[in-house]
Length: 400
Ligand SMILES: *Cc1c(COP(=O)(O)O)cnc(C)c1O
Image (cartoon, rainbow, N blue to C red; front, side, top):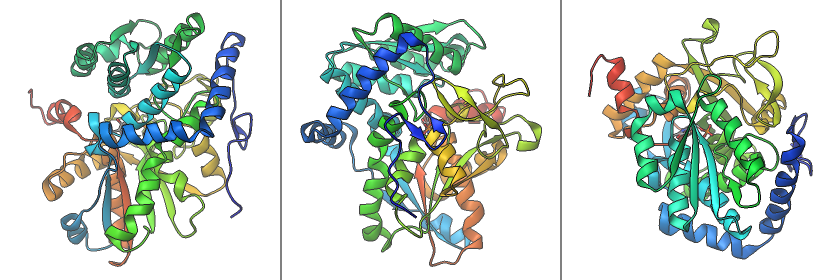
């Protein structure tokens, strides 16, 4: 394949991406795009970024050979990229730090964010405390009820959590509200977006900040596994942890890339969150063109997943493009399969994985037995599952 160098200057990944926003947001996005272009070429910015990742986040995250599980499956060797060991328990902090450092360069002292399950809200509240910024997190009123520990975490960190009462009172409504805040307060405020979606330059920026995942892996794999993996696999909500793992491998021949979406109750049921693998069409959501779960009238539909972090009807535009050109494959894993992998990982490896990550684990566990023992699968273990114990207990009829 030709050298991959996307997006273009206007944020397009083939027909996807771009900037589909109200006129009032254009100036803010232009300012951000110009500043990021300057920063991209400034080694002092990346030096500070790497310093923060090492001393505050605890990077590089290790790569671990899941030996017992691999043996039991009897096929390919499964390795984990341990993003669960990062400060705050997932990959998200590395992106939040990158954007906060950019905000500081731009002289913005107030940051805002949207959050669904609360994980990105916690990451943003964390970096706001770290860099002395005022922080407002928009969160659907429904989600606030469901995710009270994360709401309290954000408050402990000094953030203000703003309940959103519009629409279905969940993530997509919180995102709309955060955009509205940004338009109103653009001079003082930086919008820290939580996944590789949204209008240009966000999908590119988020990818660049999280590419550290794949870059570290490329360096670590020869040492830990003796070579690069045959397959890299990651779960896909908006697509940030997956693109962070995939991007450095795009130009590496012979490395298969698999993104795992939330199959919910099964693709046939319609109750899922799998715009790429579930046969959805293309549309515009939150400022960019991409695959999108919608009804016959183009209305965004309700999604379902046992994992709150994958419960999003859209997906980052770069994944739509990678799907179309066939460089990455996208599959769905349903709730039951993810839960079963969750428990296997606990019992066989002594690691409680996030329910999001359990989707990627389930795909690896399904495919490993069909591959030779000399083959290598690298799973991006995007986060730890402490946040999910109430969900898992609830499904088992246990109240904690
Ligand atoms: C938020 C989250 C995800 C999903 O977001 P992406 O942008 O698709 O990476 C996956 N895993 C964990 C642990 C998360 O917290």
